[in-house]
Amino acid sequence: MRVRTYVLTAAGALTLSFSLLAQQPPAGPPQQAPAAAPLGPPAPFYPHVVSTGLRGGYQVVAADMNKDGKIDLIGLGSQNPELVWYENPYWTPHVITRDAPRMVNLAAADVDGDGIPELALAYEFSTNRQNSGKIAILKAGKDPRELWTLTKIDELPMTSHRVRFLKIGNQTLLISAPIITAESADGFTNTNHTTTPLHAYRPPDWKRETVTVHEVARVAGVSAATVSRFLNGTAKVSEEKRQAIEAVIEKLNYKPNVLAQNLKMGSSRTIGVLTQSLVSGYFADAMAGIDEALQGTGYAPMIVSGHWHAEEEAERIELLIARRVDGLVILSGKLKDAQILKLSQRVPIVAFGRVLDAPRAYGFCLDNYWGACEAVGHLIAQGHRSIAFITGPSDHQDALARLAGYRDTLAKHGIKEHQQLIVGGDFQESGGLLAVERLLESGQRFSAIFCANDLTAYGARLALYRRGIRVPEDISVIGFDDLHSSMYTTPPLTTVRQPLFEVGQCLGRAMLKMMAREPLGVEVPQLNLIVRESVRRIT
Image (tube, rainbow, N blue to C red):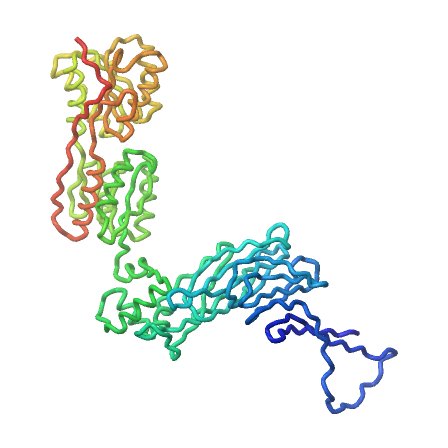
């Protein structure tokens, strides 16, 4: 039997070689083992020169790079600009990257199981007298002999670095150990204080596990309790320790776990927001107002949608409460007032679209009745007497208030109501389009259409356009909401403006005051008529 032992060497940091020790046992049948003899001189090792191009310090790893069952070598000198794969058996050099100057460490492992190992690189660079390093993953393409793809995954302050692959079950992690040397007050290296925190990177995205308070404490030379007190502001920390902690936080790019800190203090610093649509411009304005009201307070919104289904709304609220939100803002919806009052026993609630006044629940509406009266009154003032109305959902309080305003305004001006001119809609563009189709097919004459919201008006305008009916020359159209896009329709839409951004601001501020147990003092925003070009005066 032939025994081979490979030994990687670097002669004077100039040559990359390996040595071979060969021993051949005598032929013939097995014989009795001879008595032990004194050890003689070691057998000779025969060097095989692979490369003479490595300069400075060196790094070498051995791996089967091309799935041919032969061990290849990968080497790089610290002063070489290229990382080279030497292919067995003729040690043919293949440059696989030119982007690893001042190499520190190298490791190889087949992470993705394709038979070709990935390489982990750690290499240095210096800025402003401070040593820093980068960690990268090098992966072969379709042809491993061509340049490989280098992906930088992290950057750390360090004076030296080690990277290793660690296999745990079916998962391979990349472990790095940067040696971080503290600096003295004058900015120079303090050789008496070094630390080696470990970092783990998990494929396939190779994101580093979060830096912990304990790691910050080790590098800063203080206790973890001191770092916690500094972060929470619960106790004074000496100026010297404060500066050390701040320097390490910046150097390690430490991000405190705000959620964990807040939960320790009994607060998540989040406000749940239940909307009915994540794509509607109507609700988007209100959510933007809530977000603006929370700016600079340390609170952030957590938004979910109920999609106008009471069961889904209840489920989403339970999800928010389980996430330990500090308060809840409800934008419209199908839940009953009694349900909301019961939920307020668990979390403070501020609601829009319903009137509530309880110790932990407050809600307000805008005056939809008044807004409808303004819209119909404007049409009447422009000479219109035959006014059609496309309603909203029959179970929606805002829609019912607008219908009441339409009817009462006609009666106030002595105009007879025609039931055939009241057509059901659903607050959607499609509902407006279908409603106009039904109006036109009914043969009823009308000179204007009051739409229960702007989306309905958009659909109505399209139906008129398809019939060759001009707006406002033939039919006038007025909406309700004043969405952003209403000023850009053809023609720009006359409508009743709901100040939804201001509504959101009021809801956010009311929630902050309720949590602080302060008087709410809410001033409900007012509706107003926005006159544009979709209504024509007739005689």
